[in-house]
Amino acid sequence: MTGSEQRRQVGHVEPVHVGFLGPLAGSGPCGTVRVEMIESVRFKNFKVLKDTTLPLGRFTLIVGPNGSGKSSAIQGLSAVRNEGNWKVWASAGLPSDQEVTVEVRWDGLPPGVVLRGNWIQGGFNQDGSSSRDMVQPVHETLSRMRKFTFLPGELARPTQLRPNVELGTQGQGLAVVLDQLRDTDPERFDELNQELSRWLPEFNCVLFETSSEGHRSLSLRTRTGKHHVPAAGLSDGTLLALAFLTLAYIPNPPPIVCIEEPDHGIHPRLLRDVQDAIYRLCYPDRLVESRPPVQVIATTHSPYFLDLFRDHREEVVLAHKTGLEARFERLSDRPDAPEILRDSHLGDAWYSGILGGVPAER
Image (tube, one colour):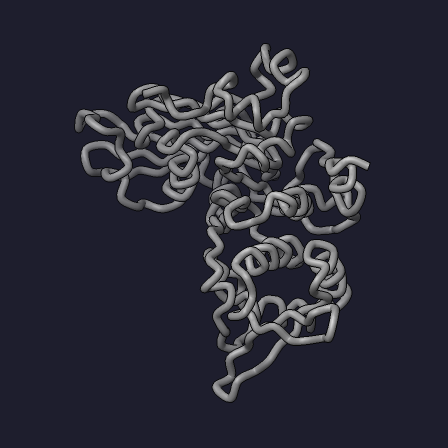
């Protein structure tokens, strides 16, 4: 059995691209508005994104060189829901009378209905190009978006016990979130422990301790000897793996999740499992879960992680940069992609520069 076959044998969730019917609805002039997912984001004069559109699906992986707009795209989604400092986000050298615009278009809404944020001459505006009642549900959904950049130090930090703790954007509150999962959904917590032992065979379960100050901390129990290893004694990669498992198993995750470099700090052999955790968020229908799907946007510089999406080219977006301007291109829209990938790994093809989306030659 090859390494690839071994990775696919257990636990891998193959995506099925079906319509996403989101949980929110609002009334508009045409009746009920059904909020599905972000279809695309149009950028104009937003940092390096001077005039380009980012296509999105249930899952989207953006790959490209530094400064090619990957992080800017996520910032743009955050900016359109809040006023923020749009002047700082204007393209370099932009005249004062030029607009900075981000338009979020939603699948399932009429084509002309967008949520738009724009800045011009010091003023911020936000509108939906139509009835505000119609775009209110999408604004609410976008307001619940979370961007995660997990930090091992925050993941290991003990957390004050209190009700309804949510996983922080850097992993704050991990111990209490897992403790809540054990109390409210023990079957799901057991499933998480089973996956943990598959990902990291040296451990077999998560345990908890409470200090005299009322802080909850976690530890992992070793399979051999049943030793308790406190979070502070775990490797960074182990803590990061536990964070992705937790995000995948919490019963009510955010409707939109952005993850900067989910491969960072993770051993290449675990990247397939990280992909499975992300697909668990995106495709709950394959696991007979009743919650709505989560739309996930991730970025990467890793050819190893990128290669896992060779057969799902519609999920990959290349970020190209020329001079001070960047643009996005969905891999499945490249007519030469089938020929290039006929005998090549996707990660190798991207790293070589054949597909673009790499640093410009010096």
